Length: 499
Image (cartoon, rainbow, N blue to C red; front, side):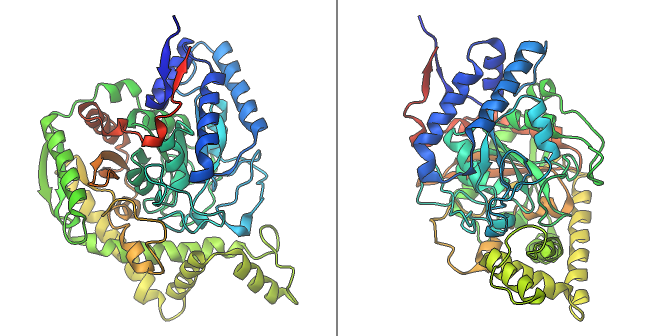
């Protein structure tokens, strides 16, 4: 009698285990993802580019590894996706922008080299806010991605295509980037798990830069164990990223056996106040009670510098963006205006035509805070605020092992609801920018739903380098609860696979 496996209920790690055991083939797993993509991506717009030849070639590599390697990796043969700001020679890397439409880099990102060598099956490149500047995925030149839970709503950003693809089952995991919450915020809005490792844990070589002191490659998946497995595949120095940390393995068996007893978790009181949706507050506090039931000690803690996080972040991020994006001038690569009359006009027209409104807004702000007469008033003060926040967190982590707070102040808004009010939009990043400013690891976990059935995320923040503890605590939480097992209703059709 044929065994029936419901692929829509499986995590990336669970799928990898079935592939290694021979219970399901890479072709059968890939066909499931192909069908999900065919059914859903016309609505969700999660992918920017796909090429069947690339997908099939990576599947064949995975099959060779499975046939020839005594101990394949946890994720060998598992279909996945990459955010479209991660360089790949096989597929275009557009950063969701007209500026780089159709651009094919001459080299591969370190993380893609490592994933390909371990047998990852690449489904394609995923939609994103233009140059990762946004938190709704509405700034993409290729149109907005949509939330699988409710396609009339945003998936979050900037890694919105990653979150939508994982939540809908088009891929089992995705690798994105997180500058101020761009992995964790869409994970919360779409009801999946999103991890930003410690700054330097993963090489950024081949990640198109937004704000270099804040950028970090991160992972979205169904559960914390799968996030840990992906990070294990991509972590460590490569000789190209000077900020990369020494290689430290995250032991999957240690994550599985993690014990919360005696672990001290702080609830930053300033992150549960004004502006937080009552439903979000309730579910995050429910998560705190679940951690207590599992053996942790949960207490309130003060983080007085939290009100400085948003202004400090946006000054620093925009200043670095202004520097990093100055290279897009229409000369060597990227969009080149065909209307220019001289060199200065070429620069002006190419950048005006190539960049969207949100990118232009942030570049103008960045150049302003770096300009003579304003550098000390804005940029230097933002650096001091960052140091203050980092120092406060360092002191807190002498008394606590982890911090728990909301990932977002609300659930996923409707498409277009943000309008033309950037300040309101930027304030949605209050909870997620803090770990980026201090270079700390953080994870977003599904912790329930609001009255409309929209997902809510809780965020765990840990000490520098303490990624394994965060993942272990998250895994325990996901053993005590089943929020991460919830799937959008559109996932239910055609999910079963007969073997």
